[in-house]
Image (cartoon, rainbow, N blue to C red; front, side):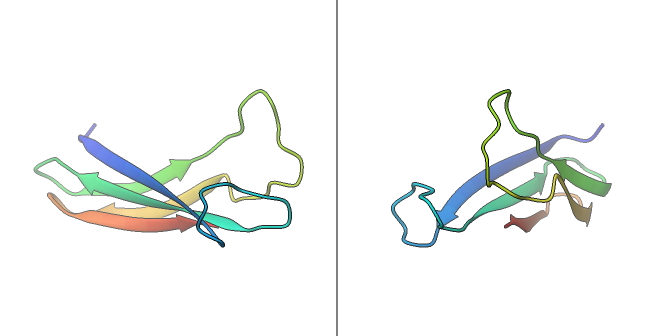
Length: 78
């Protein structure tokens, strides 16, 4: 397994950092390949905690694809 690192940034519509009723938001996920080889078919899997949030919808799997060595890729979870 290649060493990957990631950073997640939450962005809501009004910029206060709180997901409020009727508001939409995105998660910007930056994945960095710290290895010396290409990471193939990189995917991000998201799941809810034990306390499910009603009305929250998202794709549980997002595909970043291949990430070359020492490069990074951003994907958006909306």
